[in-house]
Image 1 (spheres, rainbow, N blue to C red):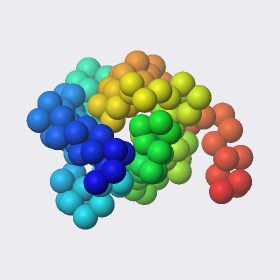
Image 2 (cartoon, rainbow, N blue to C red; image 1 turned 90 degrees about the horizontal axis):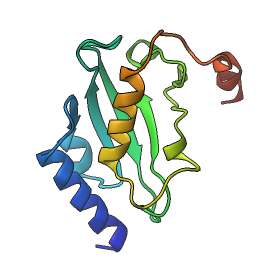
Image 3 (tube, one colour; image 1 turned 60 degrees about the vertical axis):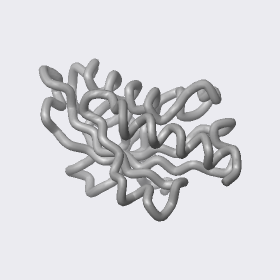
Length: 137
């Protein structure tokens, strides 16, 4: 097991035993491949997403934690949250997933950031360039 896989195993154990409220890792997704995780997320009480259930997929390359994971919401368009920073294809516009990533961050911190992003949302709408992005893919 290389250093990246050891870090992933440690983070997986932590997320399984001390998950943020509304977050649960899908054990079946990690059983066969430690580099692809599905994480269930539920909208926080009292928010626009109260009780709504979503699935995030994390993909880790060999350079993790020195490179950020690829994180997207998965499922059909109805199961992807409508949010100004989430495209209808599941892609998330969040700085810690790109330029602001550091090895000090973790899956748990990404989940907390996404929960916070959802919880602070005031209006359910797609990003203004949603239709253009979908044409590029």
